[in-house]
Image: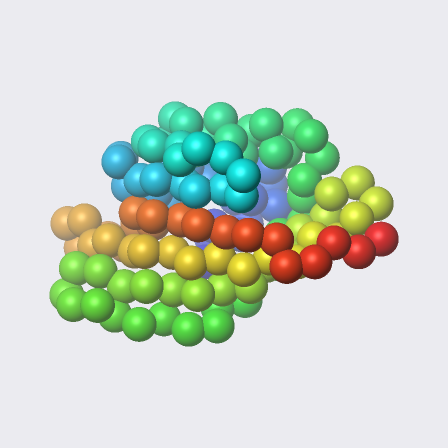
Length: 114
């Protein structure tokens, strides 16, 4: 996830989307599922344009679910203008030709502080 965080903190939505499979689904809070790299890139581009920045990501748990998939739980913190937003995520990782990509990504907000 270090490379993902680096791309995120560089505000490079296109680079962030490369960590996802071609048919990945991002499930943000209070939103419909965003399917595919382009939809996911658009989501991150909009977030960056709106002022979201400075991702801190901590892996809490990774459970390999066979040779081709794994489930990861993580906790996040981002800055949004004057606020700090804490969240939790679950990623389903898929091994595609020997490389790991996020196939499903769901996150929610735990707390917002000033």
